Image 1 (cartoon, rainbow, N blue to C red):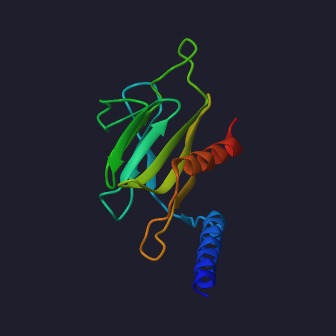
Image 2: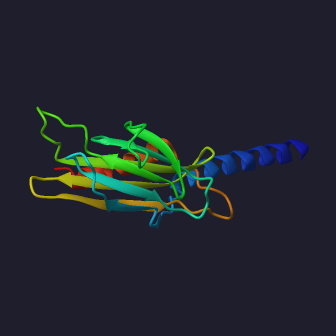
Length: 175
């Protein structure tokens, strides 16, 4: 009888572990639309387009990890420019199209990707598109989402998951 109960207990644990693993694969990621950045065009002394981007979130400890494929990011004074930088809620960063290609010709499209992190947790992302044509420069926030806490805990969102989501968004609008 003791052996039977031990075997039953082990079988129950195996079923629980098996089902727990399967269940975790089926749990859907919950996303909420959110206004996480404000973007506005600003005049500059150079001939290139410039946008001032303000980070928005109620938690000032959140890190906004910003990357751009074309153009450069920097502080509003235009110094410390690079392809990527970190910011916090309330911070302003400058995107500038001062990275000319092909003998002074500007690129036609740029994407700004922003991933929001709290410690090691990915809690949201933003994809913003900048289009440059002969007559106009425009910006639009294509996707801006947060992954809300569930029962007070952050969702387990991998960097690969976010990268895949960002690439899908960009593919829908790439010219």
